[in-house]
Length: 386
Image (cartoon, rainbow, N blue to C red):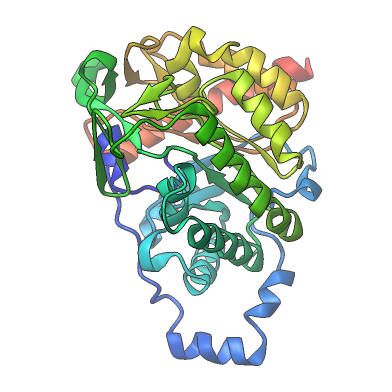
């Protein structure tokens, strides 16, 4: 999942990028702005990539690119040259601050672009929340502060994941042309990774965590944060478990690993501000385990306006063993995905996700993916307008 561009991406086979500093706005300047009320006035700024319910303007699918935590001018020129309007930016550690988010918005908009979301690895996969460990309420309060900061900056979408022991992968494998890429082989899996931390099996947290516990802990979290999300006009898209298997390291993955799990989870949330970050790759990884295929899922949840963001990714096969591959080289016809999104009038962001390594580096791989996605989108627009 690329929203937080942390050390996890090393596992995914995507070039890791360091989160940026908060030096873009001098601390003295920021303090002066805050004292004068300008920082509070950020709430009334035009919304950058607004994704609240009021932003459903029918403006169409928006292609987006993940950039580093403190993108350079060249990074932003690259995005503009691709003809892409929106960027996604990671944060974490000391960079997950209102000051830094204001700096990022100004920098991106100066380059003629918009921010769809700023991720925060500090509150994305929280074992304290998922497993009800010591510090749970403190992490929930940290998450609420994050939502409020996004609202002040005028960003109205964020991705959340409810995995207690990270994203699991096995050794990288090769896809077309020898391109290195993330892989997962269930028979060899023994650890998960998140934000630079490794969770080792067979029991990553010393005991088994039941499905009831995971459901109870999700319910406690989502009921606590929904009022803030609604107040700030922020939509929370929940990412599937990666990989979507019933259990890893003794921790149940019973919620966000199936269609029925999502359906029940959104009913518990009971809010239009809680929906799905649809990772197509994860859904394809799960295959029949998901209960409904990805096209059925798009038509059901997309028809309700509950898909907020899409991670556009293909894999060579479903579990128990998959390798992430190029968009035109997996077992799914990705045009069907784009067309289904267009048919349900999805108007959120679609990002190129977990691109395999290519000669020429990450930008080459990103450019290939965006070019392919743009062609699919133009074809879908033409056919659906028909």
